Length: 118
Image (cartoon, rainbow, N blue to C red):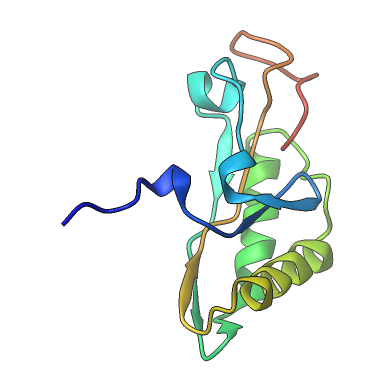
């Protein structure tokens, strides 16, 4: 049985402050996060429509970004709200959520301090 490729699923992804169609959530091949691993993420489980220890995960995401020398342009409360809204928008009760923040493709090189944080 053939399955739908993961990048062609239906639904939404919260990206740069807005919900976009799953298939439209794309990044450039020269993204700093891809070439230099300048990205941070959390793996979060939702049970019964609620993400377990959501705020703790989001605070850790912010701290991980700080340790890599960048600031996520959304507050903990804004990211928590986006995660909760995403679950509702998708109609998920039990799910895995993967918030990720990365340096964009505006600069290439080991240090890319002026690249956008996505």
